[in-house]
Image 1 (cartoon, rainbow, N blue to C red):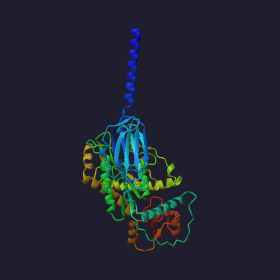
Image 2 (cartoon, rainbow, N blue to C red):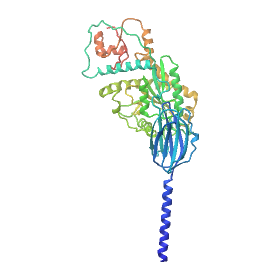
Image 3 (cartoon, one colour):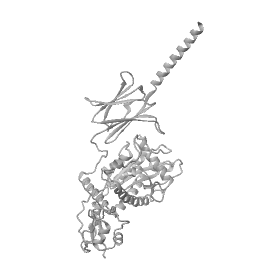
Image 4 (cartoon, one colour):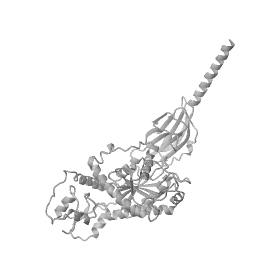
Length: 487
């Protein structure tokens, strides 16, 4: 009997221990910190969790609130420290939910569309719950393009695509007039600004690379991007659109989508390089490669930059299936070739200017598969201003004088290119055309024109027409003014 009683006591102790352990495991999750980033079109609230948990997010009206319920979780941080300014949140309340768990209530000052998702641990963070408050109807860009300029630019883009389509095999139209003496008079220019989209890499919960002294890439590149935008806006005939003008995250696809939405003529993404060794230093310039990276370093860097979308909770794979409205089929190849040529040309001039203010890590424009450059209809570059992993360059990247020198160098390269090859409807093109003598030897390209047809129409060899207009191939754009050489 005594033996049976002893065994029974052991079983009771084991049962109590098991129940205690189970209760401990259920209550293991806690909110260790809260982080908030406010953007012009959304706010992102991140819960840093000690363990994975289930979340239920729903809205309430009168007054407007967003409720976030976390199962079996407790609050181990002070929500009152959140920087709520410039966001849709006016206050945060927390409490124990009926039946257990944590309830967080966000008092709102505007209409929102919420979405949420969880993220598993990575090299920088543990378990996270991300709650996005999107503002319907708001632009992600604080100073969007003027509607009239947008209309002019859209007409120009549509005409360029129509021109590209005529270059497809079988679509070449016969010359409309075989007379070698008829020259169509150039029409007046709309004198629009050339729009430069300036993208500061990383942001928000994605700090980018971190230097030996703790300098965050997202901070220094934002300063340089702002200086670059100021250089652009202070120059007649140019306008800058800052893709990111604060400490918040924007997905890689969304960055180029914003540039396209703002009808940008060019897209430049500013980053600070990093490597596992502190020795590398210098600036680099990258354009998109259709066939992969031109060096092992370029491929490694492209992979590391593309992975930042995973930090932000966005799938990092690129698909053109959702971009049918932009370009289709072989038109994509034609436009990509033209924009790549422009990217490489501008990249060479930017690299030359950077070499005057900083050491160059690579003396030529590198090509790699950066997702942020995959905008087929917008020429684009990624500029690595220096190695933040190098202690000396980290110090220089924090220096406002050096930041100004880098931004001036980048814009000098862009400006030099557009002064030589201004977009047809731009103020710079109008100024260039008015500096020429009215000798009647100009032709403004119309929809359906091809270079060979124009050459036949004006009785000049194609090679001579290319040489007179500094053309490397047969790609031309509607509205572009060609100089017709004397035959």
